[in-house]
Length: 256
Ligand code: BTN
Image 1 (cartoon, rainbow, N blue to C red):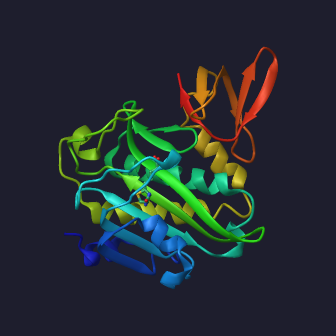
Image 2 (cartoon, rainbow, N blue to C red):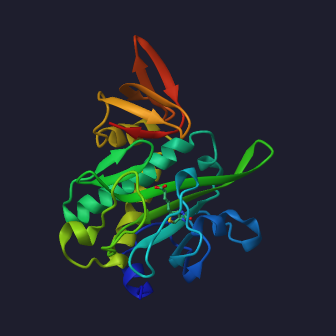
């Protein structure tokens, strides 16, 4: 059982998570906050679910998470300053905050994998999916969905990157309330740099991305491209260098 009291005591934010919704079961925390009919529009609203029946990840993959073991939650952003075109930077802020929270609390070294997976010892410990709805050309709401594997030790199914959890890495049961508060505290701190110094978010993100400079392949499900992972540009896109030419990659899965 998640203790709202223990969580609240450790939450240090001004906006993120101040409007907090806890639910036992839901289709998907992302889909719930994206749907205007559910009448949540406060910037920074967070919904945490013990179980999602249609939890999803990038490329329409199912996000599996056993009831009560992990953290599966979404954050709603509605403040106009976040709804411009630099979505990827918000994505980076979200994965960087996972890495910082894990390193601060557990001294575990994390690695970030473009576009936004968080790895520990080469295995995936968290994934992020940012979705939005627009009216005409205007983005109205941005929802950042985060799944962190906390206390689950058995994973079934097929994974591109093998999964792990904090419990598997540390051999101890982790207090989810403390981790969620630490995450949201970090996320807000990073997000505060979004408006005036987004380059700092990118710089910190890149410092944890081990693949820059490496030979990689990148696939979008249909086509695979090869080259050197040259850099990430200021909008968060991957720059792939091959035979002297640099190509901008907007999405895909990176392999070494
Ligand atoms: C990925 O690695 O592909 C991203 C996974 C994102 C999963 C989270 S769990 C909470 C939120 N609700 C969803 O349906 N998906 C995200």
